[in-house]
Length: 254
Image 1: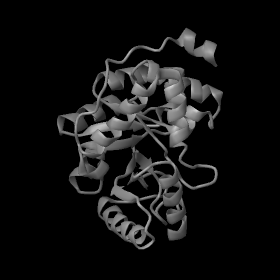
Image 2: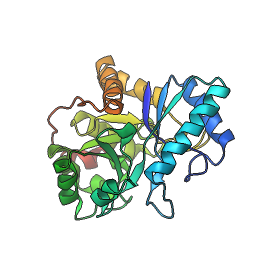
Image 3: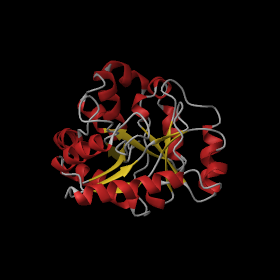
């Protein structure tokens, strides 16, 4: 299993606060069946600045620590980029790090809205060979209230990644139901942990895939897991044409 979104790097953001924390997270990940993790520290979210060069160096150091501790986990470089108008320029300056040096960039929206310039920015990124992957859209208030926003982004080439804990109901029934609606509407392509620690923000990957298998069958599990592998290799992920989520149905579920 591959986890494409995890805050496992020590002393970089609100995730692991020490090497010991990172190693404990790694042990838990292995217990979940995870063998590769993309380290995705926040970049330009609040006071966190984690440019490409510093992440690459820290990933090397963590992999060496994992080797010494004989923990069978490989950490790959990545970044969770808070959306901003100068993203393309940041990439060109060598500050923004796509997932494992592929064309895929993890993009985070503010929790309560979607910037008006998003569609134009995503177009510019794709024209320049980059593919935006919207992380945890199921937790964005504006997308919950207006699901057609996400539909338009996906229709125009963006990918999305929902959080395992959302599928499990850890963020509440409303977000769980919306997460599953995104799955049913082909509006999400990846499931990842967004783990920050081993206590209240842990992996939940195996539990989430149990939910997916129970509701949609083992083929759906294989699809999400294979997409993660394709993503880190820079290959095209599997995706179906997205469908609209009807608001009436949405409110009934909530």
